Image 1 (tube, rainbow, N blue to C red):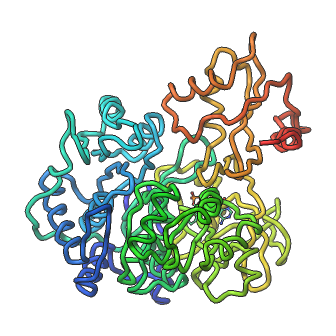
Image 2: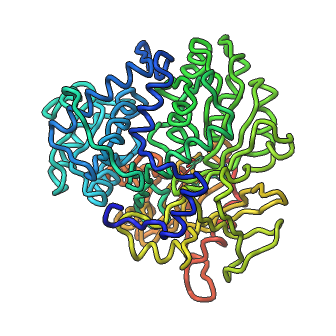
Length: 535
Ligand code: J2J
C-alpha cells in the first residue's frame, strides 16, 4: 500500500477476501465490466449532454491516454476540485484505471483548505472549473501553484486562462497496466476533528465493496435513475451508493448542477428520477417547495437522507409530501455505512439511522473508559471492518488517538444501539459543528479568529438552528472594542476559509466557564447559549 497509509493486518485482509467482501479487482477493471455489461444503457446525463456506458468508457479511455501523455504516474496524487460535471466522473474513472489517486476537494473549499490538501497529499496536479457559483477558481489556483512545491500543473474545465485546458488530458487510448486492488484508489476528506481535514485513503477493494453493498441495500437496479444533488466529491453521493453504486447496478446517473428545488424538481420530471440523496437541511427546503411546484415528482420512489440527524417530524413528512419512500443513511468518509432498507418497518425508518451494510462491520458502543455498553445505552461508536480505514494518510500521531490498539476507528459519534443492530445517532464528542451536513472543524476557525486584533480569546460552539440543525456561533472575549460579526467574517474570508466556516452568530462575553481541570468547559458554554436561541 502507498507509503504513509496503514494497511489491514494480513489475517483480516485474508478473511475479507475469503468472505468475498474484497474481490481483488480494481475500480478500473470493475468499470470496464460495467461498460461491457450495460453497453448501450444510459450511464450519465449532465444538462443536454448524455453518455451511454460505452460512450462514457470511450471518453475514459481517451483520458487515460492523455493522463499518461502529460506525465502523470500511478500512485501520484491529483487534487480534484470540480462541481457536478461529467468531467469529474470521467476523470475519476480514468484515474482509477491508471492508479493515479484523486484527492477529492469540495467546490466550497478555498485557498486555505486547498493549500493544506495539496501539501498534505503532495499533489502534483490540480483540476478546477473556471468559475462556479460566481467564484473564479483560477486566481486561487495560481496562488496555490506558486506556494505548493510538489504542484506542477493546473487543468481547467472551461476557459483555462493561463493554465492548461481540460482537453490537454485527452489523448490516444493506449494499454494501461492495472493497479493492485489493495492499493489506494481515492483520497476522501475527513470532517476534521482537529484543525484541517485529514486524508482518508480508500482502496479499490474496499471502495468497490462499499458502493456495491450499499447499492444492494438500497435495491438499486438497471432501472435506477439517480439524481446527484450533493457535491459528487462527497462520499455519500459518490459511493453510498451514489454514482458508483448506480453504475454497478447498470442505472443512470443524472448530475444536478445545484441543489435548489427548482433545478432538482425540473430534473426529476424531465429525467424520470427514481432516487435522490440529500442532507436534512435540503430535505426541509424540498418539503417546503414541493407543494408549490408544477413539476411531476411521481417517478421518485426513494429519498436517501444522511449527513446529519434527521428529525422524526421531518422524516414523517417525506412520505406525506413527496410521496416517496425514505431511506436514512448514517455514513462517514472514514468507512462505516449504516442504512435503513426499503422493506424496514416504519418505526425503524423514521427513528433510526439504519444498521451497518456489511456482516463484516464490527461495531462497538463504549463508555468513557472504553468498556462495551449493553444495547440501549449511549456511548461512543467504535468500528472496524472491510471498508473502514485503518489510518489517515501520513498522520501517525493523529492515528494513535483516532484508533484503538486493535484497529477500531474512534468515530467520536455518540450512538445508541437497538436490539437488531439498528443505530440511533444521539450526538458527538468530537470538536466539529455539523452545519447542515457540512463539517466545520472548530479549532481551525478558532485559530483564524484569534489572529483578529479585537479577539482576545474565542470558543466556537454549535448553536441549534431551525434549518441547518446547527450553526456557527463564536463566543468571543474582546480585546478593546468588541468586534462586529461582519468584521470577523470579512477576516475569515480574507484568510481564505470556505464560506460554510463563517460565523452565523457572535456572542461577546467576559469569561469562559472552566472545567475542574481549568480547561474551557465547552459543553457548559454551549448550554448557556442554547437556552437563548431564537434563530
Ligand atoms: C446523524 N449524523 C450523521 C446521520 C452522518 C453517507 C451519509 C453521510 C456521510 C457523511 C457519508 C448522519 N445522522 N444520518 O460519508 O457515506 C455525521 C456523523 C458522522 C459524520 C460523517 C455517507 N450521517 N452523520 O456525512 O464524513 O457525525 O460523511 O461521523 O462528511 O457525519 O461526516 P462525513
